[in-house]
Amino acid sequence: MSATTPIPSHVPQDRVFYFDIYRDSRVTEDVQGSYANALKNAPDIFYTPANGGHWVVRRLKDMREVLTDAEHFSSREATIPRVKNPPFIIPFNLDQPENIPYRSALLPWFSAKAIQSLEVKLHHWAKQFVEDVADKGECDFIADVSARFPVSVFMEFMEMPYERLQEFRSIVDDYFRCITSEDYERVTGKIRGIMSALIELRTSEPGKDLVTHLLAAQINGRPISKDEVLAMCHLLFLGGMDTVTNVLGFTYQYLAQDVPLQVRLRDDPASIPKFVDEAVRCFGTANSVRIVRRDCKRFDIDFREGDMVLSALPISGRDDRENKDPDRFDIDRQGNVRSNVTFSSGAHLCLGHILARAEIRVLTEEWVKRIPSFSAKSGVRHGFRIGLVHAIESLPLRWDVVRLPQE
Image (cartoon, rainbow, N blue to C red; front, side, top):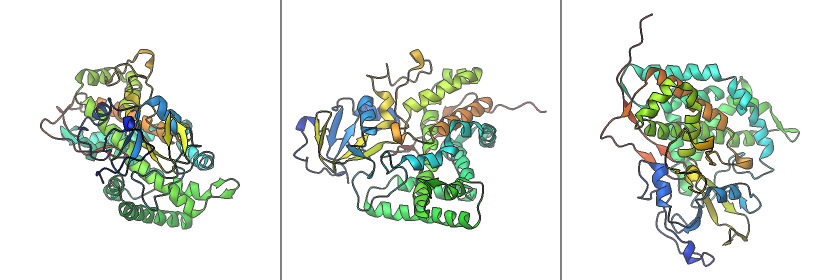
């Protein structure tokens, strides 16, 4: 699908810039940095003829406007290229105000208070996965740690069988590689089948999990239908299995190269929250897609109904108009200013953003206690995926084992 399509007549030639979001050769293992660099000479909002043709927004200020302008840019379709019968996920594909009641139903599980109550449990999980590798002197950080820790937390939320973790992770990876209608139908069918079975189980055997909560919740004075719960669980499955895993992976790929920062995090754990904030700014993973609701003129551009618009959220924090020296990872940024929309904005702000930050912080707190100094294995490539959601596929690390004193 990387073949180009004709440039529509409403697109000015000076707004055309070729970029393939799925396989552009300019993107390297330094995904976010190379992605931003590849677009540095592009117009602030440009049209690429790749993948069916679509707009790309690369400046933070413009992204915020698109993300909060449901009147012109709708969430009802979010695939590039457009496909027949696109997945419908709640509240992801609903515009404001329709999405608000569903977000409200989920909020009790993702509020700051709810996440704070998980602190002890998060440390328990993180410590377990760090201990599993600490005495080995090496690991694949993705497979052994970052794909296990946040996903385990999610699976406990949902009371899903932990032994199927790798199967579920593989399905989500497959989903985020989808491009055609057939791809989406095939993988969506797998996800909906898994979640439908869980919903039926919780209907007959209620638990203390998130699915049971949704089945008992109400919106606008009525119960949430099973079809709606299924569409909500589809979103939860995708987010819970992939997002934090990838942010952690890209973050530790960087941290493995910065020995002084490793020392600081070990010696000054109070600096870890700033480390998390900088990681979120630098290493976002999820792009945002909108469809133009009707013909309109925005940003001095004539958009046409049905145009697809991608806001490049993972590089929002790399905008040099918003953040000084944006490619430098600096936990001491002046004024602690780290402008970004890594977790989106407005009515579509990621509900899991507080949990995501807590998981990155807690894992780092536990990691530096047991593995105070580490590096990437030399000569090993770190596979990665780009597209609507970026991912790092492997991250082999090594370290000198620190033996704990015998009690």
